[in-house]
Length: 266
Picture: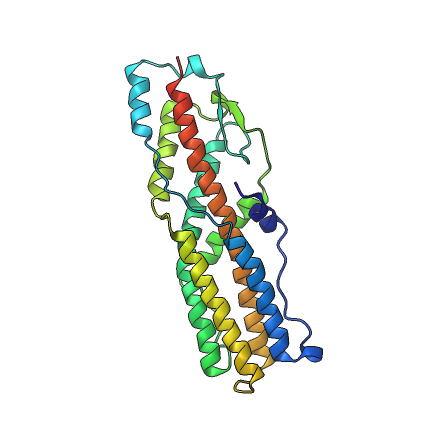
């Protein structure tokens, strides 16, 4: 579990282009991209995706075959996520938000490419086109929902009694099934692909800097502000996706631990 990403989402800071008057546009922009990628590169080195396999059906059958009663095991302690607050309906709420986070992670791959194309267009035309638009419909609202969820997370105990997590076995297996179907969208190499694509954005930024320093390109204040805003936006989005990946990876591990714990019930 990577707590750093969660902390950065909770305490987000915007990147800014500074020192234009003293350093010039080219050098100020160069330092800006250095700050962006140094932070991003360090974060991406911690990105991890896993194979998300949750074979809950076998455990469900085992409990039925053994006639295991939920009530008899209601006070058994089971593994829960780091930021889970035990209580009625809380696991449903938690899983629902992680499923939303999966959508944001999946969409991030598309949005990186869209941003890369936008940056190339700035180099080609020397100006920013009309306001940057997300490729995926309502992506900003989906990101906002995940940010709101992460900001409200509070660390809790790593275990809870069964009756504080689920109301019955069908709820447990139903949530595992829902999560398992959603998380299939995340592939084992996704983090590697995201890191590569963000590096491409950085390289395009360096090309932009080189052209400005060589006087091949003149950037106006409007375009400079657009670059600052969009790069800062993607810096924040990187934190959100990193936090989401950590929570997703942990939930997969938690569900698999719970299945082993269920199998030990009497």
